[in-house]
Image (cartoon, rainbow, N blue to C red):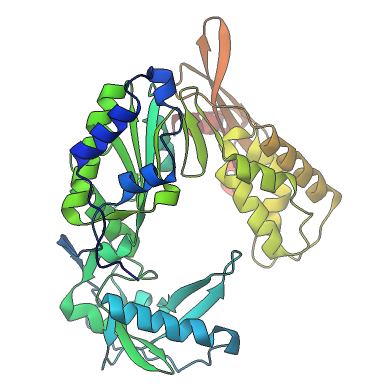
Length: 414
């Protein structure tokens, strides 16, 4: 439930609060944990969930015929959660009763922590929707922007999507069916194909002039990065002010302020560079040998996200990659076992990759794969910036040696 009132802290007051807490501390100590949980909550409580007038979410179906999915039976173990969710959302004003000709089904999923995730199956609606071309930030480009920074703050938004109102003329298209009746969203729900792009657009409008310069926004994840403490205070002041102006609320448990090392987008970022999230590394170290294609896909997907930390990743992972293709039977061979063990070990021993722009790159190519290693010389030491690799297609494999090597150089330029 949304509380009827919250403690309001202005951006300036937040800055004063931090300054007083650390008045006697030097810069290094200022990057330590700030206060206790109560102080953290005060920093993170920024108004209530209020609608944003910047953008309304539209669903352009270009005159498509409404689709109506039949009512599915809700598993008995979820009946209590279903009723509670509907009551909560109605009280919040996020949904309302509907008489729409559109009708999508709900899907309830039990999470590892015991909570229930509420999903709407909007696949039919999405098929009829004209897609939004607004770009989503490239994660590698985001990480490159952190070069040289020594102080970081990260914030995670609460109820982020609900900041955007549904356009009144398109609310009926979000209708979903339950045994308690038909309902539609007044706020932008998860599951709509254009929701991510439109939310990113809205966030970049809110923080216009700051993205790529003083902060990075990736959906509802925000990171502030600075060279010095005073500059960081000013940026924090500005960010909190803009959040307050549009009524956005933060998740206190997901926020960290004035740190020399933080987790962002699955990476540990610090002054020295980036490395994989330690929790993910620990999970990889305990990963059991896959027994199905789905389990291979899960492990391969994890490794692929951190592929820049693994030298010649594409060559090593190719046996597992082949198993994820359509119409390829699951056959766990000795090659697959070797690939699995090498990748698991490589993730556990992943180096810290520097941020600096590349000064030198070495390229290599063999019959099926090509790879690129980017390095920089710092004080007579070779620092590794990144690794990248890829598989050749049938046309590439017909090339001569010189053409193959040039293809690997093209990988370097990317």
